[in-house]
Amino acid sequence: MPPPAYFLSGHAINPPVLKSRPAHHWDDYMYQRYHVETSPALEIAPFPNRTRVKVKKHGLATHLLKELIRYRGNREVALSRPCVYGVFSGPVGGFAPRNYCCVGCLRCTIEYPEMVQVYPEPEHRLLGDSYFTPEQVDTICYEARTGRIPVKGAGYRGPFGGEGWDGMWTDMSEIVRPTRDGIHGREFISTAVDIGQKPPFLSFNEQGAATGESARTFSIPIPVLFDVPPASVVSRKFLQIVAAAAQVAETFAVLPLGALNRFALQGRQIIPLVSREDADALTELRFTPLMIELDGWNEALFREIRRRFAESTICLRHDLGSSKELLKHYHSGIRVFHLVANYHGLGPDGRFVLDLIREAHGAFVEAGRRDEVTLLGSGGIIAAEHVPKAIICGLDAIALDTPLLAALQARFLGECLDRQGSRFRLPRRLTVNWGVQRVENLLASWRDQLLEVLGAAGLRDVRRFRGEIGRAMFQKDLEREAFSGIEGYGQ
Ligand code: SF4
Image (cartoon, rainbow, N blue to C red; front, side, top):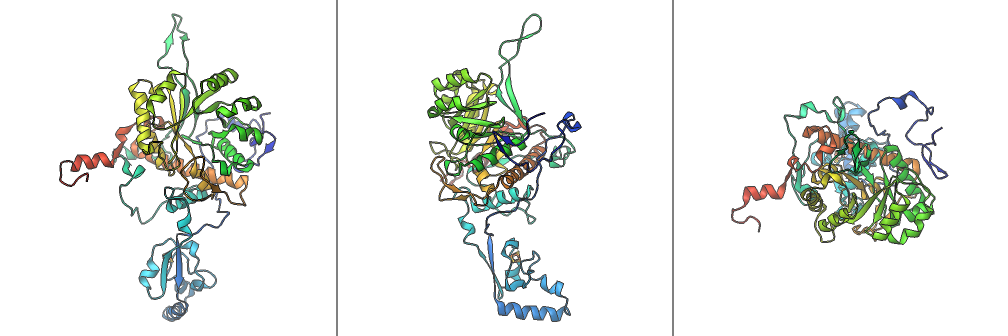
């Protein structure tokens, strides 16, 4: 009998998504397309709406009376106005507006300015921080609640450019689009990526048998892992959520070794993060991980891990921004790099993660070593569209950090920039089943959006997207091409 799913060293987690089935079900022997199961998971803590609707009660009473007379007592028609989203359709109508139904279309206040006013909700402005804006928290919560792609019926009304990721656009081809059908799945698009080391070339002896270095990789069906959580949220429950969500989604979670030992957690889907201070704690690790992450370069620790866990891949966690050092570590034997920026996507020298990823990828390309290494990345990747953009810039996969916290309704306590010092508060009513479902929903939504981008770009494999800079346009480059030489440009 295989070990039961969701079993983490004696701490059984109820399966929230998978239905139980016989150990050797015939489905186990059939090809199955990768799919993340979604299910509605409503908020467990109060979640402020973007807007607050204020109604003048006397004006509303007069308005309703007029409407009832005009429509000869037809309550349904009278009560559907002035909001078709049901804000005024509660038991006492507009006398107690249902703010949570308001989508901020402003129709009511445009039609009846003397009676209705729509204000921004001050509580809503407190969500997230200056980088992870309230609108982005809104979007993540919608994705985690429903598992669906957020669609704004009125179309996109924001600017078509900006700072950071907004200065990069993916280039969609009208010609190839009809042949690749995104999430509808008539034509299969793979989102699987390989992690590990690959030889630069294959060599064979005279008998035709492979000789020399062989590839040591494992695949994940979605280019998203979960990054190590900040210290302020580390608890048994939180780690169980992340580990179980990684197991259900068939991906991996980076978790601190100290906490794994403290809470007696283990499982194939866990990547222990080992720092210099943890060297002694390695002996307490109760399982052989597929991959171990080294928190900063340390020659002695690297050798020790290699000796103890000869079967495990070793990944180096390293700040983004120093390509020379990355190449040095390549020559020391590292083939998997986890490149990290702070939560606002800034490297130690203040440059943005987009440029830093391009630089790291470019350094390995120039050295002729890019196909031998795997680049994972974290920091500043907080929206679904950032995933394909980061992959185009040169990552193989990303590791989620703050979006996981936003999906679990964690409050950002002040500016959350620094990985060590940032503080978050999780909701009191957090449960493992709810948390796993929220994370699964988020992943399903992000994967669907990745499929849409791949379909629109005419690619059927996300691995082909890595470093495919020809599929992107950069606002700075386009502006330079268009305006350089014109007086006033660049001032
Ligand atoms: S702004 Fe739009 S959604 Fe909100 S109450 Fe007015 S009509 Fe309804």
